[in-house]
Amino acid sequence: MLLSSSFLVSHISFPSCCHTAQSFPIQKSTFHCCLGATFQDKRVKEQKVNILHYEDNMKRRSLLFFLITSGISPALPAFGKTKSKNPYDERRLLEQNKRIQRENNAPEEFPSFVREGFTVKVVTSDNYVKRDSGLILWDFAVGEGDCPKDGQQVTFHYVGYNESGRRIDSTYLQGSPAKIRMGTKALVPGFEEGIRDMRPGGKRRIIIPPELGPPVGPSTFFSSKQFEVFDVELLDVQDCKRRTIGFYSDVVCN
Image (cartoon, rainbow, N blue to C red; front, side, top):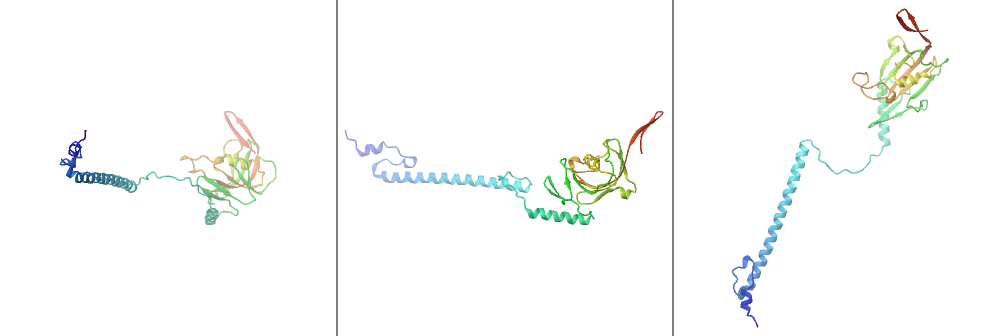
């Protein structure tokens, strides 16, 4: 059984834009209408997507502008690039250190301290000797006699300097030498180690690292962990003994 073309056309469903099509003679114009509507819908969707992308970009830019103007640093991708040491920077720091030492009237062959972050490089001449403890020494004169022992009293002069070569203390300026009994923890660990093997008449420069230096804090004289430099002259070593008179007891050194 053959169906007429008018029957086929009457039973085909067209898009909404073509609802007026009722007969075969306008079938061609009807499909043109539907095709145009499809392209128009696609163009509208693309415009909406572009608008959404534009709004997202504007939001990101506004947020970035707010973070920068408010002083908040946005999280940016970091690259694992390490900073290589530049010999020129170390040489420049050494020259700057020497200039400051000259302004502070530091003694000859005073050590230089090159700081890079939390690390400190101590630059000295070949006259200095570094021990395993970190203490650095230079003997100007060896002296004669026996080295001090625990319980004995040592009499010495000293001049103390900070890293820049500025004098911070001196018994020469005070007019009298210092007297301390060895082994009583009256001295900082680095200083006591430095004079323990000296002999009377000996002169020595002692560079004390922070780990062997004095305690740091608001209740102490030192406010930061730095190297300390001392020029020491050991004058005398005396034996000490305890003396008791009635209820009174003291230590006498002679």
